[in-house]
Image (cartoon, rainbow over all chains, first blue to last red; front, side, top):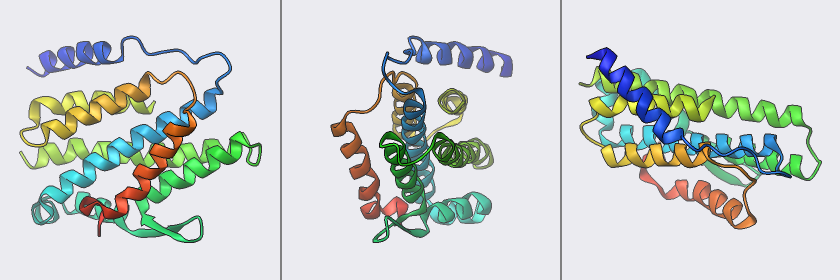
Length: 138
Length: 64
């Protein structure tokens, strides 16, 4: 059964990603990667936070580490000096700011790459929690 | 890595998910569109994305 699921997952994944576009001429691959990371991370954070919010008491009891991770994502952070946002959104605003600075030649590629890695790592952690949570609450 | 890995995780979750299927499908569609992105965002897309981030302050799921 697991093999069947793995095979069907691979086929579905191939179908979903079939037609992945190559970078258009003139587009900066690092900026495109940053924007892909921003989109993917926002989707991951949305999913885990809405999942946890659907029954916070349950997750706090059955998967406390997952709930703590979500609470960490929710902690208010100050960005752009005056705006207070949940950490999940603040991280993405910071990445977007670095990306815009890079586009304006005010930041170097190392700064942008570092910001991308921070966001991607957190998004990967969120996705890993999805797998753990789904299995633990079955 | 991200788009590919996230999509794989989402697909592996599909058979086990009983609630929140719509959110999971929306997540997959977003990952798919990210994977297929070939050019830089337009100014309108940039503005819409930033607005969606600032709108999370009103989303109960993002409230501590």
